[in-house]
Picture 1 (cartoon, rainbow, N blue to C red):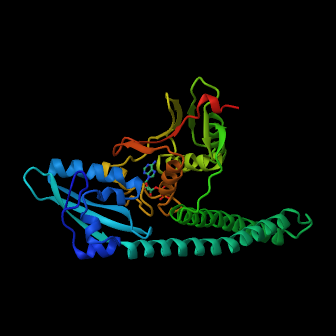
Picture 2: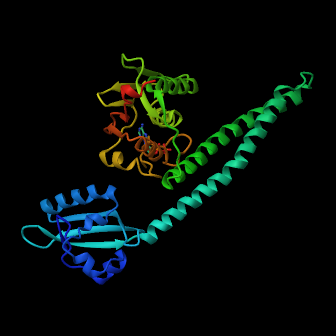
Length: 346
Ligand code: ADP
């Protein structure tokens, strides 16, 4: 039992055991329960108290506490006020260490499996390319039926190579998502010009989808400095663009815009595709989520990981992601990045 300040009035034995502090320590006048929180969760607690005061109860939220011995205690916490003034609350803690550990093992397994799957794929791709090269370099003096057979084999190999490319991308996504969740994700941050990253990424996609129309609107500033991992930011924009190309009708233009605000730069990708309901807009950022409605299935079946990866990458850069959309009205996916200050300009 606690109050907004975090004083503990009553505590059961179970929580005493979970936290490793004695009952006396927890009940002491100087103890504040939020001081046992990992600092980044203090804001979650402050928000939960606002909800408690306005609504009398707060929904379960994940928080991580630090035990007396310094180890971390992941919990799910829910609370309800117990007096009319809503100044005191009964708080319930569920120890979710096992669940977190299982999640971690799953991610580790995923990472290991994807890593192992990648090696033979690289070999298969190399072998297909070698076979195609041998066909290309063949002597021209083959009998017509042998020539025809070789042409057929070449077509089959090209189709195989297309499928291997898809598979490689999927395995790469699995590997990415497991690294992100295990925080084994390294960014090499450098001062980059966001204009260049956007221009190059759009040019690459335009090259890959020549029949499609991609418009690009850039700000008057030729240089928009940001501290980023250029490859990763390119990956995020590529994901937005390939989704737009995948889900919007082929005869509709896609527009990419770069806007510069006082402290952040924003990149927007607008498509005239099927659009998304509010509920779908919330879920698309979760891993493995795919919209199960007509018009939302891409031709090469994704895993529903692209946007989860994009979100994690942008958050690692202290930026934000979002989407504005309505069913039948297309979608605008965006992300922001903090602008690098002038002093850091080379
Ligand atoms: P996927 O590999 O399935 O495309 P993403 O994480 O990139 O995975 O996207 C998640 C889901 O969000 C997609 O399966 C699709 O249903 C929906 N989605 C993503 N981008 C768009 C878009 N531009 N228009 C409509 N739906 C989209």
